[in-house]
Image (cartoon, rainbow, N blue to C red; front, side):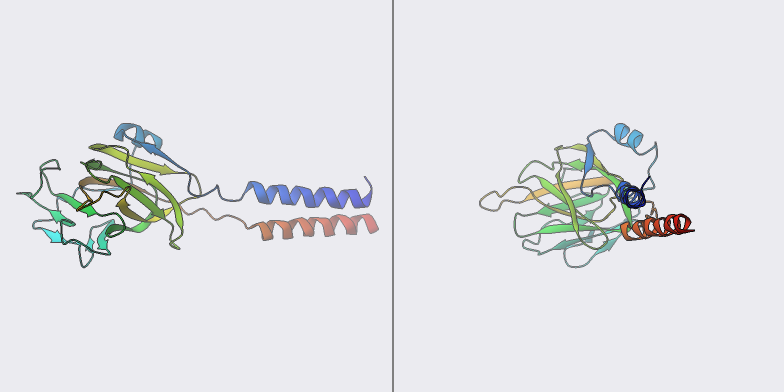
Length: 228
């Protein structure tokens, strides 16, 4: 093969290798409305779960965060002093399963709730109650650098809803917000319980620049062999 063509072939091979090892496009996720199907998708077991049973009294996350072993909850841009607390029996609202749960409220353009994870996750799910009785609920998924990865609407009113991210995407924060605006008092009051997640596994990935550098090293070695 002529020397010039050989160099082009080596560089093209290095570039192809670099592109093929780039992380998958972030933001792509698969959603589930069955806990069993979600568990099957993540390999049969979750890394952690939270049922709020360790709480013995109501704790508000309207003005400060409430911490669990895996995440914290805090309302932001608080408009109405309403719900947004860990509600333990006897519960104030009936949109739950009778045990301690997160009683939540969002209002379009006014009030959101942040779930900040202690460790980034690749999959997440929870049991929801009355999540589509008003303005419905959107989940904004953010990376560890607070970049928006994706937005997904909770598609069930009551029942399990979860997602599994595409390879290479890890979620560090979930922001709950209203999907639509209802005039008047509006808002969406809903319950969340039995939260579960799969901790993302960090996999070192070579950079494109590093791989191209390897290509140039191979090119230099091939050139030296040709000139001997």
